[in-house]
Image (cartoon, rainbow, N blue to C red):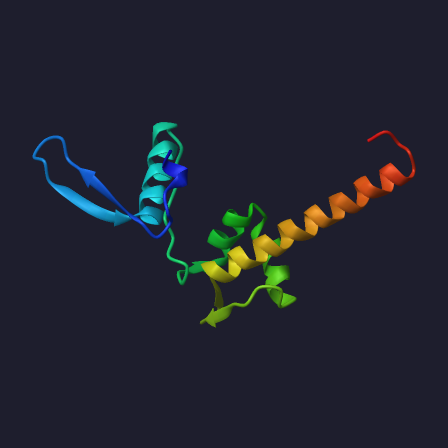
Length: 124
């Protein structure tokens, strides 16, 4: 099974047309497979370099929040950013780090509520 392959291994991809082949690291192959699966479902996707700088609107869209909300988060210093003239830019990697922290915080709050419901015998 493909999941049993050593992650440091190399996978050979061969063309059926002309017989050419290339070798790619397994982790690159996994990304290709995932990308093809998304495309097969007709879903849109984009590849963004981790050091890419985003506008506040692009960053807000990725977080699925309004631009004014993101501006408040930036003002509070919760996400690093820099000014370019009057505009702000956010690195994609910083945005993803913030998103991960928010997800962890949400999971912890939900777990706390579930634990409290258990203690109170609410049947959840």
